[in-house]
Image 1 (cartoon, rainbow, N blue to C red):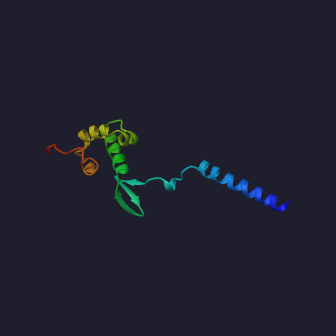
Image 2: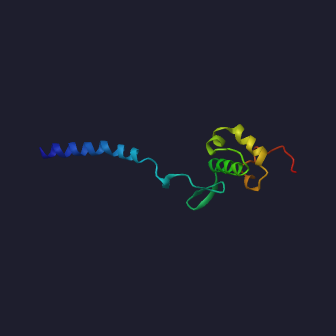
Image 3: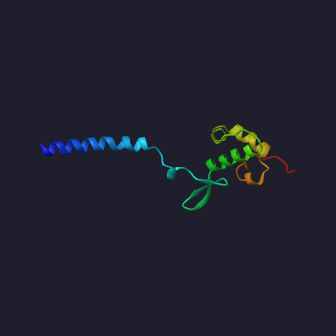
Amino acid sequence: MTRKFTFQTLGICLLATPLVLVAGGPSAEGAIKCRNGYQIVNGSEIATPYCQDNLVAQVARQYGFKASEAEVRNNPNYKRELCRFVGRDNRLTTACVNENTGRRAF
């Protein structure tokens, strides 16, 4: 009887473990951390499209556009449009490099 109870308890615990992990959701430690358009990975800054798109949205909002990070990431034409208007800002030289080709400097 003791063994059966132990195996049942173990089985219930194993089944409940994934539910607890899913219910907890992603932690703040697992979130992508960006600083000035660069992703922080092990203390180093790496240029990633995710953080670059976040920077485009952030700078565009400072210029008065209602741009969300998700919209810039999911709609390349919207990013291209924002880069046309605010892409000459020095903070966006890397983020808008592909969108600003073919334009002359002022």
